[in-house]
Length: 603
Image 1 (cartoon, rainbow, N blue to C red):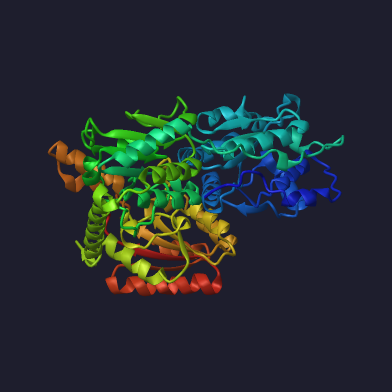
Image 2 (tube, rainbow, N blue to C red):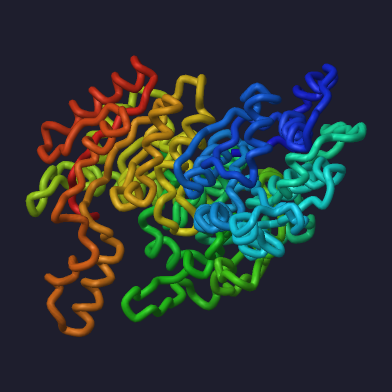
């Protein structure tokens, strides 16, 4: 979702009301209010007790409002999901070294997912003469930001109270400037808890907005338009385009102008293209890429992977395109590269690399392509034939997937496509948004997804424990707009941060959680099966150390332990849709959380 180009000025008028901060943390909260921060998620900690008190007693626990969490990984995940759904950031606060270490996986997820999360922390006192014995020493670092510096866009530790406003404004702007990402700012306990002894002001935040989007060089776009309009079978691959919903409309316009197929990457990082559009051929990637003579990549994080086929056992990737295929890539990946993590992926061969924000490059590219096709007959040019071919493949894919969903049980378990279909049948009349999960791509295959807000993507860094926290944050972002928020929640993922259910109950967050309960860390179990086959060993032992059985987890009882509504485990086909409908009624009528535990096959 897009973030506005400048901070909100709504709270500037509010700041005109006489306010006299008594303590440093009061001033810090005034800065939060100036930028109209709606929520802050945290697990309480002594090193930011000053900020905690100021949010509640000085700031009135409003803008920001505290979202209490039981683990720092949940706090950051809440802020992660909120930013993707709201199109603006919220704050996650983590307690010194120990809290930052707990939060580090969630911060890495936000880094890989290119999401602006404002992570704050407390430390010290840095003045060693003011530290308590033992505890203040083991919880203080030189400097704390070193712990996450390799996977945040920027970190800072203001030296004095007068540095606070400029530091936060800089961090806010850096986080929200494309390519977006998390930042970390740490506040000395002494700065927070010290009295304000002199007049201190907050600058006019409206003068510290974001820079204009990065537009492509005109000549490069001209070349791209030439290649695309002259190609016999061009193909578009999209990945992070939908982070800006307006860009989706321009992508649809470009595809329809050229009658070119569009593929979402298998990472499914964002909603990029309506899945019911006849030019959407996601799912036939290998077949389509082999036919391409020109490929346009749009914000593809792993372009090499998108253009290759991979033998997962041998760990070998082979390019799936011909040597003559021309590749264009419009992206900002080169602007956010670190040396520590190789999330930048393998370097692909690209004939026309274009460094630009697709939200402004795409409309210009559409205009250039239309100019070149003006007066051309689609039938004689082959464009009409190409559309007909794409439409036939699209319908064939959808029909194949629909047939798969007609099989309710396999090997004694409910099938994933059947469950995906039944869930959709129960919610399809609602204005829904899928805030997490996708039933291993069956949502995209079977549901109608034609609005950018209907799918927010994955965790980014592959970190387990993201789902429920991010779902709660996204639901907070949708508060009051009437949308039904749905979380397709993996069992193993929830077990990492099960206490997130307490946050759902305490803050009465109206989320529909559907457990994808395959009773296994099945990704690892698949690796075990592959290894056993490659080494001629018994595959039956692949469940040792990976299955979540003996005992089976009763997620309904777990939900009820936190005071939440739950139903299941559901194991029979005829039970699925009624259970979802009952949960849906609870979410809508009680405006509260509901969980349905469905036991199904692994994939």
